[in-house]
Amino acid sequence: MNPPESVLIVGASAGGLTTAEALRRQGYEGRLTLLGAERHLPYDRPPLSKQVLSGAWEAGRAQLRAEPALQALDAELVLGDRATGLDVTNRMVRTESGRVLGADAIVIATGVQARTFPGQDDLAGVHVIRTLDDAVALRTELATARRLVVVGDGVLGAEVAATGRGLGLDVTLAGPQSVPMENQFGPWAGGLLGDFHTEQGVRLRLGTGVSALAAEAGRVAGVVLATGEHLPADVVVVAIGGIPATDWLAGSGLTIENGIVCDAMCQASDGIYAVGDVARWRHLGLDAMVRLENRTNATEQAVAVAKNILGADLPYVPVPYFWTDQYDVKVMVHGLTPADAEIEVVEGDPAARRFVALCRSDGIARAVLGWNMPKQTRLHRQQVADALTLAAH
Image (tube, rainbow, N blue to C red; front, top):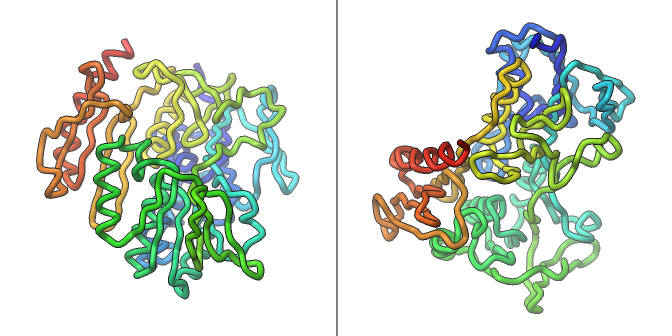
């Protein structure tokens, strides 16, 4: 199989940029184009809810590569121009400005867009945090705020709550789960995280939904829970998940179901691939369709897709991995934690908040969770990797 003469990457964040870099590292000499909806050069998203939001970093520090490194890619960067349509047969992408970009292979890396709460766009003081501009705007508002309510108890919501407390704000975290990050950690480790947030001064209002945003004179004044409780706020952050950015693919013929549906090689159609948060592919080790929203997957999947574009034809079978930094805690998870997992602490002590726990179901290691023990966590990862490899064969 000859490599394509040209590759167009739609999405200029971590997944898109890594695809371009991986192609060049593997000797690809064809034409490369990176199309991005934002005006910024490619930047990293994990620092947005932490270092950028807290003010520890200036916004420019989140940029993924210095300009000389981007120039060395010998790729055309088309920024500030959103994709609006895809012709799968002819492999052509239309953009908001009227451009028509074609290539022999197309990689879709458009990520997700923030899910919003009804009516929030009409109120000042209500924020999402998905883009660099979002983080900067929220940071500006928090500088003069006293009370912050975070709606959403997943990774992003918990991180924003931790950052808010670090800034000295009065913080309440609300969400439907019984403990923070229950979907990612499971109930046991999520409970430990909830206790830690409480110790840091965050008020938890979990296990209930949000029924409305309260307003005064066009500005948010608080959050009304389904229980009827009113949570006063100067600023509200809505962190209720992301929606795969696939609207522009309507009518393209690609299968869109909670992301772009791909085969085990991350191919959605002949010559059309997807990477990162927007991709939903057949994971042979898990025997399931999987879509992962995390930084590590975006880059690992991009490397796999670059190899497949150049003819490797290999299934992408990663050990899912993500981490979160909250206060002085780093929690890492390799694998996917079943809700009913049997938990065994194999190193350290949860009471000291330094431990590694194996999560098993049916006697098989499904995940390893490490709390402030990154090196030891990586060592135990192999058990999860071995289980996935065995299942894939």
